[in-house]
Image 1 (cartoon, rainbow, N blue to C red):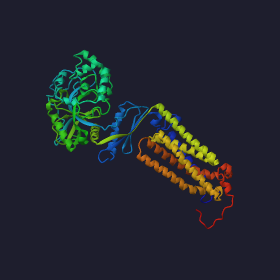
Image 2 (spheres, rainbow, N blue to C red):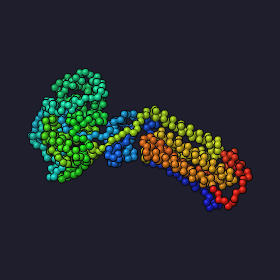
Image 3 (cartoon, rainbow, N blue to C red):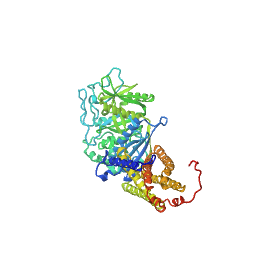
Image 4 (spheres, one colour):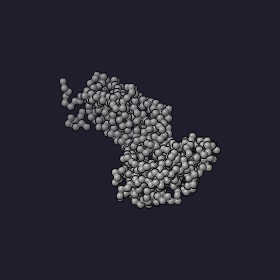
Length: 635
């Protein structure tokens, strides 16, 4: 027999809830990313505060009007920061954007100092003064051997000048189409010997490398001096040019301890020592901490291609002087990088190209000249040289970097130039370092707190509501299963991680769920006291309590959304977990709690005050009540 019109069908709602469970746990066990044993597939993705590791949240800020950077700028920043983090050599490092301002760095299982990785990418244009072998071996520079060929190539690796037409060059934006790809003249610069380097060593400004250093740097240098020994330190200080170790074999033994220095220790040495000591190689120089050579007023040492190291002049042009950079095809259908400068930047760039083109004061050593005998300008980003084109003319307008670029190479270089020009800085909002032991302790404490909270709610519900307490118990179990399955699926699909703050959000949601029980059951008692039978009181109590339950959960959900939007880091995890648990609690309220109450109302146990937990509400309905006006509309 069909139920009367308007009567609910609890079986249908319970079937819908069962269908949701089936679909959810099919996703848990068989969706993309599910692998390993069934036990492994039931593991949610845990945050660093539960398994140990390092987490840093950086906020990207734009100096123009305080506006958020564009998505493209933030992504470029993320890629550069990711390369910095990967330089630590850790596995499973994760660098992601969060919202339109934040970049979150996570190193699971690793405790590292990430204070410097958020430093803004610092782009510098520096004139190349000298070149040397950067392999860190004891190879001696060969003697100069001029050649009549169009592009003489130095022997050995001491002279790192690129040869052939592949060497990048900087020219003005062409109106004709030469594009800076003219062949080298027969009088190309011969490879210099070490003595040639020494003769030119006085040319660069001495004051650039004589800047006073901080006390902390001096202390670190003294520690390095003690590590390498007095003899090695004295020998390194006496070098005026890259040492020829074959001419003095004893010098090789003295300088050998410098090869054992870490990148951090090499970073505190003076530029002249980093350049002149041949046992300091590009492997150490490239791994220096971020911003090690950021001072624009100092001469610095940097590497290109991991094999050649250069002594570079002060930075006369900065990344903020570049207004735009694009990878374009020139008139010969070759890929080039087009550079546009700001108003002040154009004047600085013109002055730098003038002194480079004319080799003003013979500042550029023969080892630093390009194949056409002109000085080169190194484009330095984050301690490394990304390109070192030869200056082909005094450039007073837009410029081009030419060479044997592929589209990918030209686009990558243009992106690096553009990013260096962006006025974007990063402010550290949050930093966490958690050991694996402490993380496991946090996980146990969080689960224990959640278990105790749920147990207290269940004990109170059975004590106060008796049979109705079983409804509360089953509802909480179903909500927990829904939340757990959702956490596993969301961890695979969108990368959501369960943190200690997330566990706290779920514990808070227990209170929200308990409130909805109290509202419903107390309203049910009120209906019975007014003289209605338990069966008729259940749907009426539901109709009146439903609006209050929805309003209370909506306020909680709105609070969680606002908190998620305005917060960063682990607070977002708290807000997300609270909102997720609140939504799933509403699902259980509509698809389980009300249907199961309708089914309980049809049982004989429900009519017993001692069993049902309705207390004195049932006896009260048998007491005489004041007659009511049958025409009065019920509230």
